[in-house]
Image (cartoon, rainbow, N blue to C red; front, side, top):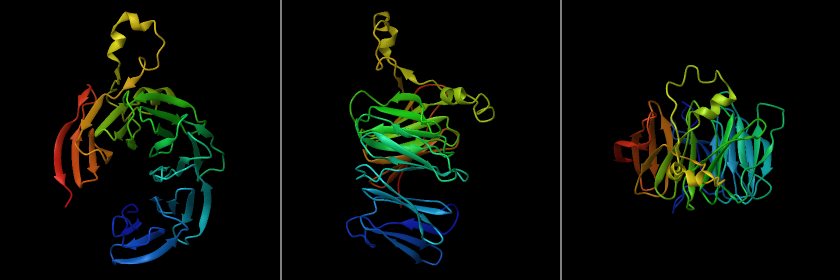
Length: 297
């Protein structure tokens, strides 16, 4: 759905799709009818939409359309994008797009509101599995198909700002999300766990005044328990120096997405039709508290 309008952008899916899989449907929900149809040459794997544009993702290309005229504004080749991976800033005044590019582990970042070129980022050595752009378009978070690390980059300049660890064993990262004020970044893994990390200290380093009104507490990510032993201090290990999530939420369903809500809450939606509301405490690490669990009606 595009903001608070009645316009919904959708594609066909499921076992018996109502619409062909290569079409993007612009639907007026108040009038219960199709307004326009965009036809692509191959299956649409993902879509993003804002008030002025629609983005369609296939396994090899990204298409950017003017939402009013449906004219193609830009088109980009991608790298083996069979999962339709794309990141797009959702803020009103930001229009930053990110996607797998050219070769394994690379991410292309584009700012549609600026003529300046943003760098191609070599985010990982292995294939990109998931990525996300912050709402204001300033940050990019990525995960590889190993799923052990989440890396956060500054969009302008492409500098690596921080690296946080989901776990030590491989897992599929299905979703990466920033909160509205870039205090937290979180991920949903194929292990059935939501991980929440603090990036407050990172953002303070970028701008001393950035959080003067928005931050009342500064959560601390966990460190490896092995750091308590002096013996391991002599070992230069990225694993031992890793930052781990300060909050977790565990569910039985391994296919899920989530988003941050106000007042330190998250909303989780699973593939079997459940949704959860849970809260976390920024002042201490631990498990999120489940507030609501309900099947989507």
